[in-house]
Structure formats: C-alpha cells, structure tokens
Amino acid sequence: MDAFKRRKLANAVVLLLSTAAALFGIMWLFWILGVLLYKGFSTLSLEVFLGNPPSPGDNTGGLKHAIVGQTLIVLTATIIGVPLGILAGTYLSEYGKNSKLANFIRDMSDVMMSVPSIVVGTFIYAILVKPVGHFMGFAGALSLAVMMIPIILRTTDDMLRMVPPELREAAYALGATKFKVIKDVVYRSAITGILTGVILAVARIGGETAPLLFTSFNNNFFTLDMTQPMASLTVTMYDYAMSPYEYWQKLAWAAAIILTFGVLGANILGRIMTQWKFKK
Amino acid sequence: MKNSKLLDWTFEKVSFASALLLLIVLFALFVVLYKESSLSIHTFGIWKFITSKVWNPPLEKFGGAPAIFGTIVSTIISIFIAVPVAIGIAIFLTEVAPPFLKTPVGVAIELLAAIPSIIYGMWGLFYFAPFMRDKLQPVIHATLGKLPVIGEWFSGYTPGIGLLTASIVLSIMILPFTAAISRDSFNMVPDILKESAYALGATKWDVMKDVVIPYAKMGVIGGIILSLGRALGETMAVTFVMGNQPVIPQSLLEPATSITVTLANEFTEADTDLYLSSLFYLALILFALSFVVIVIGKFLFLKKVER
Image (cartoon, rainbow over all chains, first blue to last red):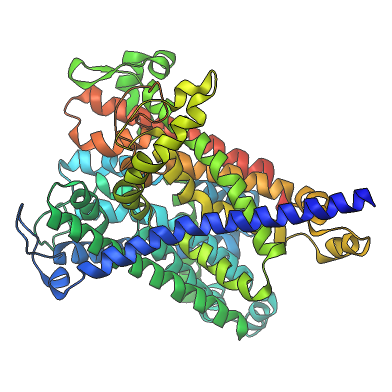
C-alpha cells in the first residue's frame, strides 16, 4: 500500500503546485490590469479626448491628436491589408488548394506572422521613409498592413475551406462562372468568418508600437495629413511615459486605458462573432 | 459571356498576385535589410561584429555583442520562468479546475494575451521596477547572491532597472501565449486514452505524466519554441525596463541592452551612415534569429502534431 500512498501524495502535491502556478500567473496579470484600471480611470476626462496636445510643463491638454492619428493609421492599414489578405487567402483556398506553391505560401505566411514587429518597422523605414526623407503617417499604416496581411490570409483560407464543396458544385451546375461562384456563394457563406478574422487582425495590430516608432514617428500637433509625421496613441504613450512632466505621464496612462479598451473590445467582439457563427 | 470570362481571368490573376506579394515582401525584407546593413557588414565583418563588445557611436565603433547578449539572455531567463508556470496553468485548466472556472480563467488568459505589450512595459517601469528595487533585490541578494560561482550574477544595487527586471516582465508578457498553446496541445489528447488510464486506477498526476504529457509533448515543445520567437522580438515590454546601457553587465541586476531596445532607442538618432547601417545589421541578425527559431518550432515540432 506504500506505493499507492506515494502516488496519492504525489498527485496531491502536483495538483496543489499547478493551482499555485495558475494563481501566481493570474496574480501578475491582475496586478497589471488593476494598475491600468486604477491609473487610467482616474485620469480620464472629456479634456483627454478633446483637448489639444499639451505643451511642456502645462497642466492642460489632451490626446485628440493621438486618437485621431491612431484611428487614421489603423484605418489606412486596414484598407490596404484587408483586400490583399482576403484575395491571397482566396487564391490559396479556391485556386492553389493543396499545390506545392499554395502550401509554401501558407508556411511562409506563418513565418511572416512571427517576424518581430520592430524589424517590419526598419524595413518600411528603408523602403519608404529614407527615400522620401521624412517620417509619415502613411509609412506607419503600411508597416501595420504588412503585419496584417498574413493574419487575414490565414483566417480567410481556413474559413473558405470550411465552405462545403457541394455548394460550389451546385452553383457550377447552374452555369455560374468561377468568379460568380466565389463572389456569390463562397464569400457569402463565409462572410462572418472573414469579418471575424479582420476584427481580430485589427485588434492585434492596433496595439503595436514598435513598427510605428520609425515610420509614422510622432507629432505634437494635430494633423490629418498622412504624408507628415503623425502621432499615434502607442508612440505618444511611449514618449509621455518617459517624459519628466507629471501631467504627461498621466496622459500616458489615459492613452493606455483608451488603447487597451479599444483592443480588448475588438477582441471580445471577434470572439462573440466566432461563437455566434458556430451556433448557427 | 466574353465579359464574364475576362472577369474570371482577371480575378484569378489578381488573387494569385496578392498571394505572391506575401512571398515577395518576405523576400524583400531579407534583401533590403541585407542591403542596408552591407556597409556595416563590410566594415566590421560577421564574426567581429558579433563578438565585439564596443558600441560607441561617437567613435564610430560598433559591436553587436552587448545587444545580442541581452537579447539571448533575457529570452532564455524569461522562458525558464514562463514555461513551468504556463504548464502549471495548462494543467490547472485541463485537469484541475472545476468546470465553472475553466471558461472564465481560459478566456481571461486569452484576453491577457491581447493586451498591448507597451502596457506591460509601462507597468514594469512605474510599478515593477520599484518593487524589484525595494522588495525583490534584498531577497535575491540574500538567496541567489550567496551561491558560489553564480552568486556574482545576482550582486549589485540598482534602481530596479536591468536585465533581470526586463526578463521577468518579458516572462509575464509571454505567459498567456505559452499557457494557451500548451492547453490547446493538452486538449488534443483523446479522452478515451485518459479514461482508460483512469479506469486502471491512475491518479490525475499519473494521467498527466504518463498519458497527456507524452502525447502532447511535440505540441508543447513547439509552443515553447514559438514563445521563444516571441520573446526574441518583443520590443516595448523590455524597452522601458532594460536600462539601455550598451555593455555586457557583470550582474543580471544591472542595466543592459538588447537588439530591440537598441533599435527602439537609437534608430531615429543615428546620424551617420555607418551608425544606421549597424542598426540595420542588428535588425538583420534579429530577423535571422527569429526566422530560424520559428522555422524550427513550426516545421520540426508543430507540423508533426497537425498530421
């Protein structure tokens, strides 16, 4: 019976340890979230959303420039990245199928998904910022788009392949061309899945800082011009957090909570859509 | 009729071009980074750049050793901290947690993986670094610092910013990712295998160690390697707390640098061609490192799981 007791004991110890590990891990994460909520909410005010950028040492001002800049950059990245990602995913699922080239592109897109984001930033700097001679909002959008394409490609490919082949065959039997089949049958049945992929991709790139550091850079003035340096919530956070002014650091926490809520909101929306799709 | 044929043909070609674009961008990444760093490669060579410890912009002397050292050491330490905890969380989520806890804890872990890394960095600078300085540092001095040989790695008094602080923040950052991927591998073990072991009188731990872990081994190792790739390229979580000192520190508590930290801090300040080119050289090394790590993780381990 000794062996039995030993096994029971080992079992109890391991279960306890794993619970402790879970608590330990979750503790850090709650600490971070708690700080974020506490610091963020205490600084939020209407002025944070609508105020003009603060000047050094000044105790007024807001993040309007960064919020608008962030929105413009992410929106432009989406406009560039989404069509390209969906088209490429369509190629893999509808034309390439299991050919060697299609599988190679799938593998390479997985690799590209894990390329360090700061490396993408240096790449866009070299091909766009350096030749033009100055930082610009559009370059930031382009580097986010580069990171977005493989994510959308992968989800589109997966979602389209889940559309039953019978649906396509039925449409072909009615004399539809391939383009019509893809547009009216395949896309239509996979639209929720594709949209979910887009939302999750936006959530993923929306919180990126590193690729914007040397592409869109920062701008302490409000601008809508994508060919000029442009503020984003993330880079503004970085600069303000490192600044010596207390009010700027406060604004950095406000930016942190706005950004986190935006990203988490998009993420939760994507998750709800996934469940909704599979329930149907 | 002719029109729809043309449309068909155009759509196929356009979608094909979009798919090819991905390969072109990935290839261009390599070529452009190589081209931009060629000046530095020709000036310093490969081996000399990797081993040279001097990073002195005013004197135009650039060696990559401090940054590469910081990147590799912080990645390894963070993996050593994160992996046991992540596997513990995965065991908790698959075997220990009562059903009513499984979903909320699982979703919480996944959402935490979605929090932008800059948040971890800011928390690290304003909260964890002071905690490290006031609370953890004395404990580390009293325990790890007393050990023979490696004690020296844990000596010295610092404002809480340094290699070890960055590694710990990094490990918290990759924790949700590693936990989620290990849990998914554990969940892939067929219930029937676990049930047969339980029917033979095995305890939960027996089932974990003799059925689940051997079955899910490849997936977990693949997941760990992917986390490694993440930690290598992570920028914002470490930039705040690494200290940005281009030296190889004597002690893990001292400020250091890493490839991503150097890039984030110095890229926009590089005023000479050689300086900028050396930074591109570091980016190329980081890209190559993470490329190799991802390919090993994805194709050596995770591919076998899928089949």
